[in-house]
Image (tube, rainbow, N blue to C red; front, side):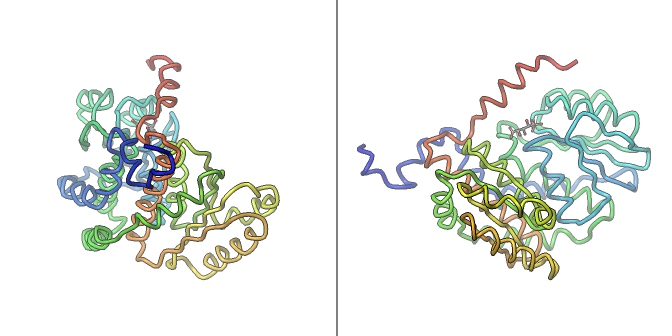
Amino acid sequence: MKEQEKRFPEDYYNIDKEGMYIYIRDFPLYLREAYLNSSWIQLKINPRNIVIAGMGGSGISGEILKDYLKSNRIINIHGYHINDVTKEDLVVIISYSGNTEEAISCFKEAVNKAGEVIVITSNGRLSRLAKEYRVKVVEVKQGLQPRAALPFLFIPLLVIAERAGLISNIEEELMNAIDILSKRDLKSNAIALSEKLLDKKVVIYGTPLMRSVAYRWKTQLNENAKHAAFFHFLPEANHNELEAFNSMKDMVLIILSSEREEHRIRKRAELTRKHASKYLQVIGLHSKDPELLGILSMIQLGDYVSYYLALRKEIDPSPVEIIESFKKELGPYV
Ligand code: PA5
C-alpha cells in the first residue's frame, strides 16, 4: 500500500503484533475481574504502615494507591531495601514477572522484619520464595507485559488498603467508576493527542491526585512509543521548572489536573499553563470526575495516547527489548 493511501489508525493496527490494544481497550473489564479475584484477601495484622516494594510497571500501582488515598501510611519503595520496617508493618512485594531483583531483595528483608508480607506476582522466583516462606500470594495471570497488568496489580492493593482500614466501601466507588469507564470513548481524543506529540519531547505534570498518573503517562510513552517523556508534579514544579520554560521550546507540556484538588492547586495548574504557554505548546487535561474514576480514566487515556503514538511511529508497542537486555547484562542475582 502506498504511504499516501494509508489511513490512521485503521491501517496501522497490524504493527501491534502482541495485541497491546486489547489490554488498553479492556482496562475496565480487567479492573472488574481483578476486584472479583481479590475478595479473598484478608490480613493477619492491623498494620501501622503498608510498605509497597516494586519497580517500573509493577511499582507504579503503589504510587497510584498513595495518591488516591492521600495517606502517609502508604510507603513506596523502588529499590533494594525496605529499611526501617517493623513488626507493626505490612510489606507488599509486587513484581509481575516475579524475577525483579530489587523486589526479591526487599522480600528477603521483609520476611525477617515485617509483621506480615504479601506477594503480588504472576510467577518466577518470588512465587517460589513465597511458597517456601509460607507467605500469602496474590496470583496474577501470566503472559502479559507488566504495564498491561496494571488492573491486576493495583486492585489487590486497593483491597489490602481497605482491609487495613485506610479506606471503606471501595466496592461502590470502584464499580461506579468501572461502569462509567466502560461506556466512555477515549480513543478519538487519544488519536488527536498522539499526533501533537509526534515530533516533540514531552513533559507531563500532574496535580497531587494526578501525580502518579502523570508518571504513568511518562512511562507508557517511554515503553510503548519508545518516546522521550519526562514528568514533574505540582506544586513542586512551581518552585523550579518555571524558570526553565524558556529553554523547553521544542517540548510539549501536558498538565493533568482534577476538579477534586483544593482551590490553590487548581489555581496553580491554571497559572502554570498560562506561564508555560508563553514559551511552549501546552495541553491541559482537566478531569471533572470523582477521584477514583478521574485517576482510572486519565490512566486509560494516557495508555491510548502512548499506543497511538507507537503506531504513528510504526513501532510495535509491546516489546521492551532494551530493558530486557539491560537486565541480562546485569547478570544473575544471587
Ligand atoms: O514495564 C516493564 O516491563 C518494566 O517497567 C517492569 O515492570 C520492571 O522492569 C519490573 O519488572 P516486573 O514488573 O516484572 O517486576
